[in-house]
Length: 120
Image (cartoon, rainbow, N blue to C red; front, side, top):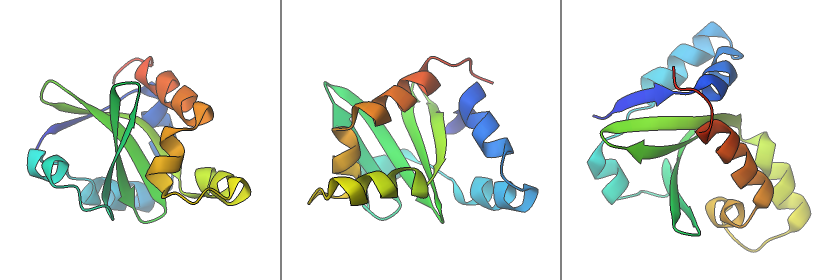
């Protein structure tokens, strides 16, 4: 397992959830190098744009977007699935969730905010 680090934004997003939801989400969110080498598409996904690699972990109704830095999983955002499902529906893109997000400037702006936030 890799060490998991939340930044200020992702920690705030996580803390906005109920205590039980937080515990369930954290209990489920486990990442190993093997998971990232053999993405299953259901729980884990990979999003790339301009040489930047970001991973997605799907847990119940939430998506955790993170990258690997050294030996740590740095979580940039914890978002409810509804955050982007509306976008995907309105855009009617014939792509999967990860592919559609890779092309979304709004999505990358959210990630950059998380990437630039202080780590806790």
